[in-house]
Image (cartoon, rainbow, N blue to C red; front, side, top):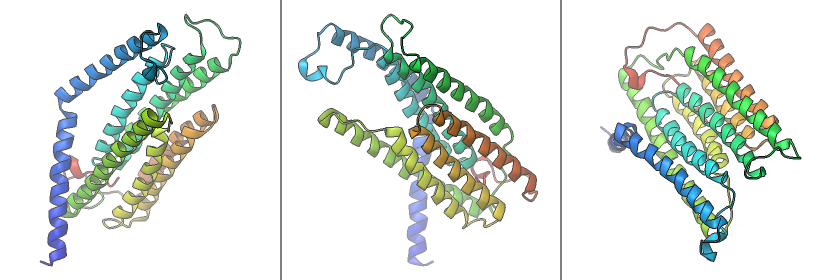
Length: 301
């Protein structure tokens, strides 16, 4: 066996071991319990620190980093929840690209809900009807957008067939391993971006949009998956569908930075697009044999 093949085989085995251990750790009930408790603790801590800031009980060096509106605690809680969901998104990429696209829309719907709660910072405490009703309209728009994506997404999951990309078990495992490598690289990018953003905020007071940046990286990862899939299947229907999924990720990225109302329209339009793409793929792609490769390698996606 050529030396290059031996090196690649060793790399793939290492990637599989590392990813499988991380996935087992992340999916364990104990981790879920710990994450849930941390989210609750973070929310209560944020409320407490904000109240201390309102009472001028925090050191002056800390004061500039802490808001004085309790509704910011809701934003913090939803941001942490989104971080958890994004990690889950990276993990599900290995099982199915189609399911990972669904996860993209799950995160988008939660971002829209978070944006709804962000509008609360424009209200006084206790909440009173504002003179400017723009925040109310934004809450209604983002809430309706999140609900519409939630409904479309339920139908999207229902129509997935999860056909195998190849009938060769060895090739299917190689494709899964390649996706595990991409997922590990995404995790490294995820924590790298998060660390950089935290550094710039606490040292320089500069804020960057974490989710906007990470969704940009997801566009490149989706294109990379399309190119990798060509190694195992060059069927037009598969290439077109996976490329369409990459386009949907681009639309989501545009929705994240679009003005109010337009962002909702883009998100909902992207969700409808992937449903139409999936229905067309199911109808016109050649009928294949039922999956015999096992759950880990079922999806051409």
